[in-house]
Amino acid sequence: MPYILNEDREQFDDVIENLPIIHNKGELEYIIFSIMKIYMSNKDYRYSDLHATVYAVQHCADEFRRRFLDKREDEAIKNNGDIG
Image 1: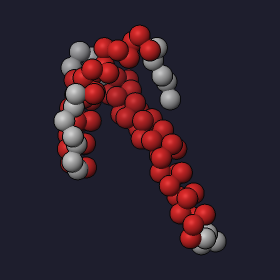
Image 2 (image 1 turned 90 degrees about the vertical axis):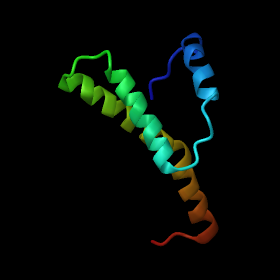
Image 3 (image 1 turned 45 degrees about the vertical axis):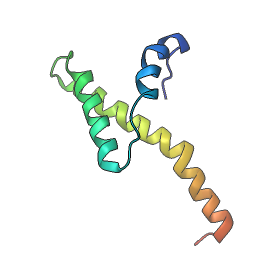
């Protein structure tokens, strides 16, 4: 996942830290979709820009899965035994 420099993160950290509590999947999806629209608002409506927007979100989902969901699955296998 492409990380940005610490000094570049500062402009976003304040906004992220002050988000209200996200209660459900619908609220999370609303925020993500809104950010995608904001990102596209100053881009050309071209395939490459649209694709980059979707790819960024997919890349984040893949990284989240790698860091959290996969570890949770490994714990479940360890605690409950594998099915195969």
